[in-house]
Image 1: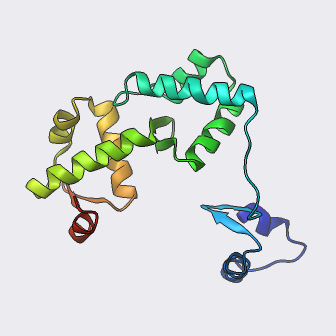
Image 2: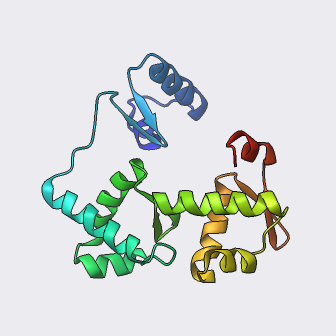
Length: 178
């Protein structure tokens, strides 16, 4: 959206631009996905080679879901250049097939949902979880569990208090029936 605002033929404040975007979104002239704007009817269609790449990425991430390869490893395994890989992974993110947990670390969306469920279950029985307890709960290593905890903090699911995490909004867990 910032790129669009910069390309306007006249200067407009970020606040006014946000109001305009909200208005065109409300009138269904454009749709917003995060910081991207698109026409409401626009859909991304992958070519067969890109669909094959999606399948390869899912296979790589799914081979060890709680210890997935990082982007560099995926690039090496697929033989696809980084720019093309980013392009396909962005589409996968929009479809929630993958979730970016750290700058170069992606997990399958289903895996993140399962981890979130396990985290809610654990926190319903105990009020907080430490990184070591989370690592033991998942049977994974700190290399993967710390980025997951930080992701849940960013998503507003947990809040870090000292070295432990607690649910940011315990009522949300009850609403989800966890």
